[in-house]
Image 1 (cartoon, rainbow over the protein chains, first blue to last red):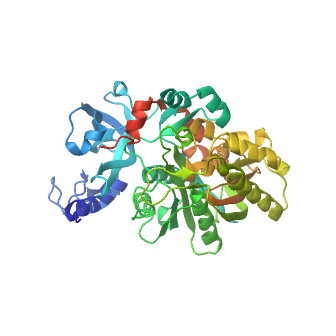
Image 2: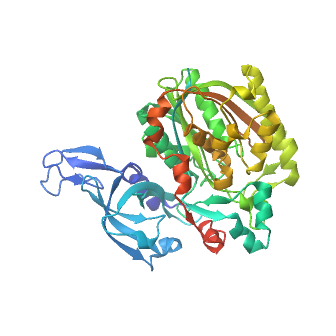
Image 3: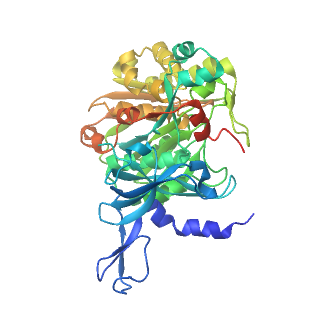
Length: 135
Length: 345
């Protein structure tokens, strides 16, 4: 069985999903995650690769109780916009927590987890999720 | 001298108590706890496997090693629960930590001693001068069939060790391996749960190889049990390692820091390495440590390790095993069945 589209997409996203690789515009300083080829702010094509910090805080969150079919095993689950310590925002599941402990501003760290599985015989897509940091 | 440059452990946050499992099957929890010296075990969440656990261990080891991941010449993982039957776990971990592409990777398999094998081979490659650093990982999310003794012990977790010859936090003074063909525990290709030989897993398997390996390395090094500060033996439960240690002449004080099974369960390929990590968490410069792994099939690897001053500076750069043991969420049997995907659609 060939599942080339899903495999190539999963492979293409490895640098950002595994190592949080972003890029920073050398002209205006804007950071892009995932990396972009042209700066949406100043149209520059001159970028430097950077790695994002692994800690930040919850900017906003919600609980998903009716997910799409590929995430039904995880339901219900928390998903949040995380503001990393350098100001970059990204979307991530929040795992290993009691939903009652979730608050805007709570410190979190990114961890490496399975994101999605293409059935029991397909590719496993790994990437980042976040857990609460003990205060 | 070749030794440990950095180490890191990881155990999942979820736990299930022996009482909770025993309640479902109408078994005597107190008798099980006393007989196996087990209290609870770790349970991986739905999104955790031996790769994600291996990554956490490797990242914690890198925090203590303070080395450039690009200088790691080998990444090896030992596991009996790889997520893919065909596709390496080690290449995923190498990619995550940034050791790619100039790195040798391989997945090792030898039941519960696959992790110590990975460390053993890293030690050999560094000693031969072929690589600067090697990363050896033991990680598992093993399954015990429902209503089976292994269900009380099969757990998830492990530890990783970065081996090098410069700026070590502990030197490896001696190594030794002891192996025979002993069919005490196995899982056939395509089968989900392992099978075992019951009591046959004891004397002719675990004890013969653990005692043979520990005696062999002490004879080779000219050392005796009283020369060691600490000793760690593979922990399929809490009882076997204490009995092995007692037969050899080790005391409870020597084994207590590395005895993690009662609170963690058997983390298979990660088991003895997790015990070593817990011991390094409390060890001081000059301490001498004996570690002996065991893998069914069967064999044991032993190492004699001497702790150095660097450990005091790097110990708290990553979470200790004790800190991870205290950070837990208890679950009931229904949640356990769900997290372990024991219900098939």
